[in-house]
Structures are given as structure tokens and as C-alpha cells.
Image (cartoon, rainbow, N blue to C red; front, side):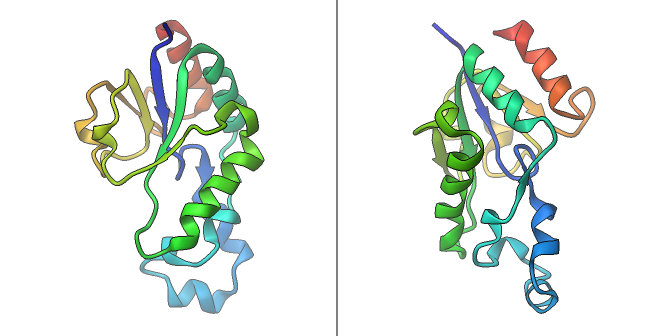
Length: 149
């Protein structure tokens, strides 16, 4: 049986700031404190370098899910995240998107996340902090997880 791996979206699979150049400056100014509340912002984001290839490879080795939080005050974020998964990850993540504000309620072996908020700090398995040593990027994460599969 494969081990369970969860991967976060924002700033892990998805390059959140990549949406900013695609938005009018008035909107960015209006939402400068909470840009994640901008309607449609999650549909404008690009993948992080090597993220798509990494997820697809890891989905072969693990029972792999995307585990993400969606802003409560931005209902388009929920559908935008699903559309992003369909566009970039396709069949590798078919029906494997979980949106929650309580990541610790999901049971698994590994969680790749850039923060310890929304229950990530209470996750029962190993929290792999993306963007920090020894996991600064996707190639480092994949090298580590290949040995764990």
C-alpha cells in the first residue's frame, strides 16, 4: 500500500505573486492587506518552478492529494483552485483536491507546506517545510520523498 502524501497549493505548487502583474493596480491597492480576497486571483497564478513535474512524479509513488486552504471571503477561490488543478495537474490529481482550514484532520504520512498554519503544525505525519532548508525547492523535496516512498 502506498504512503499518503498531501501537497499544499499556495506558494508550494502555485506561485501566488505571479498573479499580481495581471491585475489592475487599483485592485491591488484596494486589497493590499488581503490580496487572497481578490475575485479570480487564484485563476491567474502560474505553477512554481518544477512543481507540476514533481507532483506528477510523486503521484506515481504516493497516494497523493492536494490539501489547501481557501479564503473564506473569496468564493471564487474555491472554484479557481479546482480549475487550476485541472489545468496544470490533470489526471494526476483527478478528484484529489481537499480544501480545508483544518489540515490536521487529514491523516497521512507527509505534508508539503510552506507554513504551519491552518492545522499544518498539528499534522500527524511529517511536515516538510517547502522553501526552507533542507527543502528550498521541488527538486530537493522530490529527492527526499523518493527515498521515503
